[in-house]
Each structure stands twice: as structure tokens, then as C-alpha cells.
Length: 349
Image 1 (cartoon, one colour):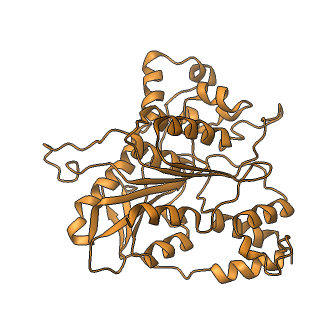
Image 2 (cartoon, rainbow, N blue to C red):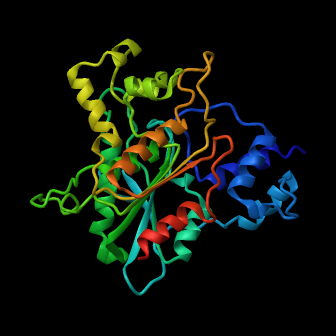
Image 3 (spheres, rainbow, N blue to C red):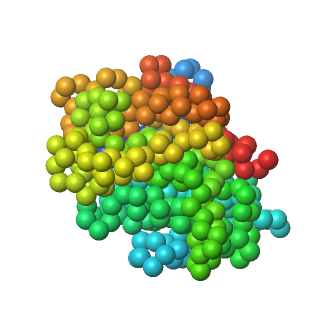
């Protein structure tokens, strides 16, 4: 029996990534093992500097966590069938922080069930409650940007509206996700507060501001013109980048009208970044190379250059951030505990 499926499954759990915005060629088994060793040096049981499939299997078995049932399942935070949330309540006599997971999938696929069990268990063990949400998918017509982003923001407001019932600390919330979920998480974190204090809807009266963000393969912008400049190749030709704006052709996308450009800017998390925004922990694992001429449309849509741009702007504003370039040569090693430790640092102060 080949170890490739085992190692690939372990990668998904270890890197905490939901469905991606684009599917890129799978790394070789040897490359996967090297990446795992960089992320999880403790998996090298005999400390010989090489991770074998057997060691990866043993380490994965040790880290496996039994499924955890949500305290509250499929609770509607809005009227649409996909505006639902699962909530996992941490045991505590005091109000708890909350980590909100937002799945990936190109804004057209994915589900809250893709949450990483180790991430969930790590939060609950630390006394941090957890939530996982679904949001409306774009359809290229009636549902386009920034609908998924606003759904994510409303989910945050909804959690705050349940503070008394769910034992939530209003001032300690985090959002994280991979790919599309990363983009939504950053949009919530960087956007001005969407609270409407005078609204008749008690959910809308709550703040959308959060205290820390985590991303895997996140895009700070979905503007195809800027993506072409930033990444090169054909990343900007990803089919979702037409659908999310209700556009019909790449020519239309690359020559936006003022109205479309305004929509590009509104949907881009990085365009909302200001010095009072929360810290960010970002992980990238796509190869850190110049996309080759034969790259497929949408390939390299999780390129580390997205992280580099975010880091440069956040550094200039004095905002704390961590940039893990797992696709570099050599790859940047992730600190033990990684994202969950970063969240604990900022939520358990």
C-alpha cells in the first residue's frame, strides 16, 4: 500500500487548509515530507534529519483527534440556507474568547465541516470557544462580492449578540481560514466597523471588529489587474475572479469600468488596512517561484507574494504580523504550535 494518500491527508490536517481557491499540482511525496519536517520537527522520531513515511504516519496517529460535536449546530445567523454557524462552547466560568473558522473553496464551494480537529481541540483545551460558519456562494449574477465578506462579518456580529447565552467575551474574537476563507477573515479584520447602532436588528448593532486574524494561502486582493502585476503568470485568470464580480470575460475584468474598479477596491482586504487593525498570522505553502509560461489559468493563486505585499504594508503601519513562507527555498519553519499559539497570545492576555 502506498504511503502517498496518508502523507497527503496528513498535510491537509497539519497545514489546517480548507478547500483551495485553485488546485495546483500535488508536490512529490519527498517534498511533502520535507515540508512536514519543517513544520513539525518533532515528527522526526530518530532525529536523523529525515522524515520517513512511517514517522509521518506515527506522528499523525498521535495527533489525531476524535470528532467533536458542536454545542450548537446549524444555527441561522441570517435567512439564507447557507447563513448557518456551528458553535463549540469551551468550559469556563468566565466569558470566553472565540475563534471563528471560515472555509475556503473559491467562493463557490466548501463547508464549515472542513474545520481542522486539532485546531478545534487546541482552542477548546485553552478555554477558547470556537465557531465554524457557512456563507453564501457567489453565482455571477445576484450574489457577487462583497456578499461572502459581509456574511462573515454578520456571523461575527451574531456571535456577539449571543454573548450572554453562549458565554462569549465581546472583546476577544479571532477569524481564520484558508484561501477564500482567508480573504474573508482579513476583510473582516481590516474593514471599518460595520455596526449600525440605531438598527432595529439587534445583530446589526454589534461590532464587526476582531482582535486577531489567521490565514493560509490568503489573497489580500481579488483585483485581477493587481494580481497579474503581483504574481505574474495566469493566476489572474482564475474563473472565480469573473464570477465573484458578475463579469463575463477576462477582457472586461482587465479593463474595469469605474464602477467595477470601485467593487475591486471594496472587496480587497488590503485596501481597508489601517494602523489600528489587528495582528495577522499568515502561512503560504505554494512554490515561491516566478510562474512559468505554461502555468494553467488560476495556478499560483496562493503565491507567497500575496503575503509579502501584506507584510510590507503592515510593517509600514507598525502592525504585528507573522509571515510563514513554507514554499520558499529554504522554507520558513513555522514555530511550534503556530497559529493556535499566536491566537492564544492575543486572546488570553
